Length: 114
Length: 114
Image (cartoon, rainbow over all chains, first blue to last red; front, side, top):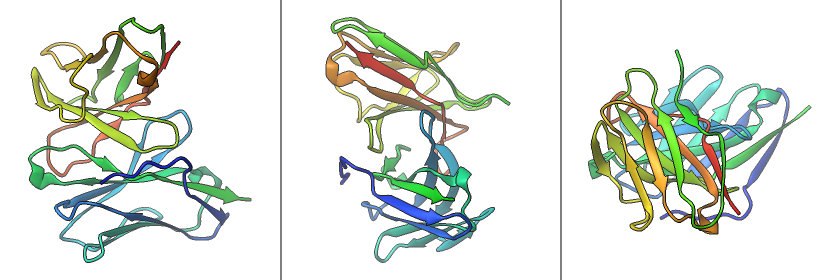
Protein backbone atom coordinates (compact mmCIF):
# COMPACT_ATOMS: atom_id res chain seq x y z
CA UNK A 1 0.00 0.00 0.00
CA UNK A 2 0.95 3.62 0.04
CA UNK A 3 1.84 5.54 3.15
CA UNK A 4 0.99 9.14 3.78
CA UNK A 5 3.62 11.20 5.56
CA UNK A 6 3.17 14.51 7.31
CA UNK A 7 6.90 15.20 7.20
CA UNK A 8 9.36 14.04 4.63
CA UNK A 9 12.37 12.17 6.01
CA UNK A 10 15.46 14.29 5.51
CA UNK A 11 19.01 13.27 4.67
CA UNK A 12 21.71 15.86 5.31
CA UNK A 13 25.01 15.29 3.55
CA UNK A 14 28.22 17.26 3.40
CA UNK A 15 29.12 18.58 -0.03
CA UNK A 16 31.47 16.15 -1.73
CA UNK A 17 30.32 13.14 0.25
CA UNK A 18 28.28 10.29 -1.20
CA UNK A 19 24.52 10.12 -0.56
CA UNK A 20 22.41 7.00 -0.24
CA UNK A 21 18.65 7.32 -0.43
CA UNK A 22 16.56 4.27 0.33
CA UNK A 23 13.11 3.17 -0.73
CA UNK A 24 10.97 0.20 0.23
CA UNK A 25 8.48 -0.66 -2.47
CA UNK A 26 5.18 -2.34 -1.88
CA UNK A 27 4.23 -4.54 -4.80
CA UNK A 28 6.08 -7.77 -5.47
CA UNK A 29 4.61 -7.73 -9.00
CA UNK A 30 6.49 -4.52 -9.83
CA UNK A 31 9.14 -5.06 -12.45
CA UNK A 32 10.19 -1.57 -13.41
CA UNK A 33 11.50 1.10 -11.05
CA UNK A 34 12.39 4.73 -11.50
CA UNK A 35 14.03 7.45 -9.42
CA UNK A 36 12.89 11.04 -9.75
CA UNK A 37 14.27 14.30 -8.39
CA UNK A 38 11.82 17.08 -7.57
CA UNK A 39 12.93 20.63 -6.89
CA UNK A 40 10.66 23.15 -5.24
CA UNK A 41 7.90 24.36 -7.55
CA UNK A 42 8.83 21.94 -10.33
CA UNK A 43 7.76 18.58 -11.65
CA UNK A 44 9.61 15.32 -11.03
CA UNK A 45 12.72 14.99 -13.16
CA UNK A 46 13.77 11.53 -14.36
CA UNK A 47 17.13 10.39 -12.95
CA UNK A 48 17.54 6.69 -13.64
CA UNK A 49 15.50 3.53 -14.07
CA UNK A 50 16.06 -0.16 -13.57
CA UNK A 51 14.25 -3.30 -14.67
CA UNK A 52 13.65 -6.23 -12.39
CA UNK A 53 16.06 -8.48 -14.28
CA UNK A 54 18.92 -6.29 -13.06
CA UNK A 55 20.22 -5.59 -9.57
CA UNK A 56 22.41 -2.59 -10.35
CA UNK A 57 22.53 0.16 -12.91
CA UNK A 58 24.88 3.12 -13.16
CA UNK A 59 24.44 6.54 -14.63
CA UNK A 60 26.41 9.73 -14.40
CA UNK A 61 27.26 10.09 -10.69
CA UNK A 62 24.25 7.96 -9.77
CA UNK A 63 23.80 4.25 -9.13
CA UNK A 64 20.55 2.41 -8.46
CA UNK A 65 20.53 -0.87 -6.57
CA UNK A 66 17.57 -3.23 -6.54
CA UNK A 67 17.03 -6.01 -4.01
CA UNK A 68 13.89 -7.89 -4.98
CA UNK A 69 14.16 -10.30 -2.07
CA UNK A 70 13.43 -7.59 0.45
CA UNK A 71 11.69 -5.21 -1.98
CA UNK A 72 14.26 -2.49 -1.50
CA UNK A 73 15.62 0.12 -3.87
CA UNK A 74 18.42 2.59 -3.26
CA UNK A 75 19.87 5.58 -5.06
CA UNK A 76 23.50 6.44 -4.57
CA UNK A 77 24.78 9.86 -5.56
CA UNK A 78 28.54 10.25 -5.75
CA UNK A 79 30.27 13.48 -4.76
CA UNK A 80 27.06 15.22 -3.77
CA UNK A 81 26.77 18.82 -4.95
CA UNK A 82 24.57 21.73 -3.78
CA UNK A 83 22.50 21.33 -6.94
CA UNK A 84 21.52 17.86 -5.76
CA UNK A 85 19.40 19.36 -2.97
CA UNK A 86 15.83 18.30 -3.72
CA UNK A 87 13.20 15.73 -2.81
CA UNK A 88 13.86 12.28 -4.27
CA UNK A 89 11.07 9.84 -5.06
CA UNK A 90 11.22 6.24 -6.07
CA UNK A 91 8.40 4.94 -8.24
CA UNK A 92 7.38 1.40 -9.07
CA UNK A 93 5.39 0.18 -12.02
CA UNK A 94 3.60 -3.15 -11.67
CA UNK A 95 3.59 -3.70 -15.43
CA UNK A 96 1.91 -7.06 -15.08
CA UNK A 97 -1.21 -5.10 -14.17
CA UNK A 98 -1.57 -4.21 -17.85
CA UNK A 99 -1.45 -0.52 -17.22
CA UNK A 100 1.35 1.92 -16.63
CA UNK A 101 0.52 3.86 -13.55
CA UNK A 102 3.40 4.60 -11.25
CA UNK A 103 3.18 4.11 -7.51
CA UNK A 104 5.32 6.74 -5.81
CA UNK A 105 7.02 6.46 -2.46
CA UNK A 106 6.70 9.23 0.11
CA UNK A 107 10.01 10.84 -0.81
CA UNK A 108 13.24 11.82 0.91
CA UNK A 109 14.49 15.38 1.17
CA UNK A 110 18.22 15.66 0.48
CA UNK A 111 19.99 18.66 1.99
CA UNK A 112 23.54 19.31 0.91
CA UNK A 113 25.62 21.17 3.48
CA UNK A 114 28.36 23.47 2.27
CA UNK B 1 12.87 19.92 -27.91
CA UNK B 2 10.09 21.11 -25.63
CA UNK B 3 9.20 19.00 -22.64
CA UNK B 4 5.74 18.38 -21.24
CA UNK B 5 3.90 21.68 -21.11
CA UNK B 6 1.19 22.37 -18.57
CA UNK B 7 -0.96 25.44 -18.21
CA UNK B 8 -1.89 27.34 -16.32
CA UNK B 9 0.92 27.05 -13.76
CA UNK B 10 -1.33 28.46 -11.07
CA UNK B 11 -5.11 28.44 -10.98
CA UNK B 12 -7.37 29.95 -8.35
CA UNK B 13 -11.02 29.01 -8.22
CA UNK B 14 -13.90 29.59 -5.80
CA UNK B 15 -15.87 26.68 -4.43
CA UNK B 16 -18.42 25.46 -6.96
CA UNK B 17 -16.54 26.70 -10.04
CA UNK B 18 -14.93 24.55 -12.70
CA UNK B 19 -11.21 24.03 -13.16
CA UNK B 20 -9.64 23.05 -16.49
CA UNK B 21 -6.02 21.94 -16.55
CA UNK B 22 -4.20 21.47 -19.83
CA UNK B 23 -1.27 19.27 -20.79
CA UNK B 24 0.65 19.08 -24.05
CA UNK B 25 2.84 15.97 -24.11
CA UNK B 26 6.36 15.85 -25.42
CA UNK B 27 6.66 15.66 -29.19
CA UNK B 28 6.21 12.08 -30.34
CA UNK B 29 4.55 10.96 -27.11
CA UNK B 30 1.08 9.50 -27.39
CA UNK B 31 0.58 8.36 -23.79
CA UNK B 32 -0.48 10.83 -21.11
CA UNK B 33 -0.82 10.38 -17.36
CA UNK B 34 -2.25 12.66 -14.69
CA UNK B 35 -1.10 12.64 -11.08
CA UNK B 36 -2.04 14.65 -8.03
CA UNK B 37 0.34 15.75 -5.27
CA UNK B 38 -0.43 17.15 -1.84
CA UNK B 39 2.31 19.05 0.04
CA UNK B 40 5.02 16.83 1.48
CA UNK B 41 3.59 13.74 -0.21
CA UNK B 42 4.33 11.60 -3.23
CA UNK B 43 2.36 11.74 -6.44
CA UNK B 44 -0.88 9.76 -6.67
CA UNK B 45 -1.94 8.32 -10.02
CA UNK B 46 -5.26 9.54 -11.38
CA UNK B 47 -5.72 8.58 -15.03
CA UNK B 48 -3.85 7.20 -18.05
CA UNK B 49 -4.91 8.12 -21.58
CA UNK B 50 -3.89 7.51 -25.13
CA UNK B 51 -5.21 9.55 -28.03
CA UNK B 52 -9.03 9.56 -27.78
CA UNK B 53 -9.03 6.71 -25.25
CA UNK B 54 -9.06 6.44 -21.48
CA UNK B 55 -6.97 3.39 -20.62
CA UNK B 56 -7.04 3.45 -16.82
CA UNK B 57 -8.99 5.88 -14.64
CA UNK B 58 -8.81 3.86 -11.46
CA UNK B 59 -7.22 6.72 -9.51
CA UNK B 60 -9.75 9.35 -10.45
CA UNK B 61 -12.75 10.21 -8.24
CA UNK B 62 -15.99 9.02 -9.82
CA UNK B 63 -17.73 12.33 -9.28
CA UNK B 64 -16.78 15.76 -10.66
CA UNK B 65 -13.50 14.68 -12.32
CA UNK B 66 -13.04 13.86 -15.98
CA UNK B 67 -10.15 13.66 -18.42
CA UNK B 68 -9.77 13.60 -22.16
CA UNK B 69 -7.00 13.45 -24.74
CA UNK B 70 -8.55 14.39 -28.09
CA UNK B 71 -7.14 13.59 -31.50
CA UNK B 72 -6.04 17.19 -31.84
CA UNK B 73 -4.95 19.42 -28.99
CA UNK B 74 -3.84 18.98 -25.41
CA UNK B 75 -5.08 16.60 -22.77
CA UNK B 76 -7.56 18.22 -20.39
CA UNK B 77 -8.24 17.38 -16.76
CA UNK B 78 -11.57 18.88 -15.75
CA UNK B 79 -12.82 19.31 -12.22
CA UNK B 80 -16.40 20.44 -11.83
CA UNK B 81 -17.88 22.12 -8.74
CA UNK B 82 -14.53 22.34 -7.02
CA UNK B 83 -14.24 21.97 -3.25
CA UNK B 84 -11.46 22.98 -0.88
CA UNK B 85 -10.13 19.43 -0.82
CA UNK B 86 -9.30 19.68 -4.53
CA UNK B 87 -6.47 22.09 -3.72
CA UNK B 88 -3.27 20.35 -4.82
CA UNK B 89 -0.60 20.28 -7.50
CA UNK B 90 -1.67 18.36 -10.58
CA UNK B 91 1.07 16.90 -12.74
CA UNK B 92 0.92 15.54 -16.22
CA UNK B 93 3.44 13.08 -17.63
CA UNK B 94 3.92 11.58 -21.07
CA UNK B 95 5.75 8.68 -22.64
CA UNK B 96 6.23 7.50 -26.22
CA UNK B 97 4.52 4.19 -25.47
CA UNK B 98 3.44 2.11 -22.55
CA UNK B 99 5.63 -0.40 -20.82
CA UNK B 100 9.06 0.11 -19.42
CA UNK B 101 9.72 3.60 -20.64
CA UNK B 102 10.12 6.48 -18.21
CA UNK B 103 7.34 8.98 -17.92
CA UNK B 104 8.45 12.59 -18.30
CA UNK B 105 6.67 15.18 -16.20
CA UNK B 106 5.61 18.76 -16.66
CA UNK B 107 5.97 21.39 -13.94
CA UNK B 108 2.38 21.03 -12.84
CA UNK B 109 -0.63 23.21 -12.20
CA UNK B 110 -1.11 24.41 -8.65
CA UNK B 111 -4.82 24.62 -7.97
CA UNK B 112 -6.03 26.70 -5.05
CA UNK B 113 -9.66 26.74 -3.99
CA UNK B 114 -10.92 29.76 -2.07
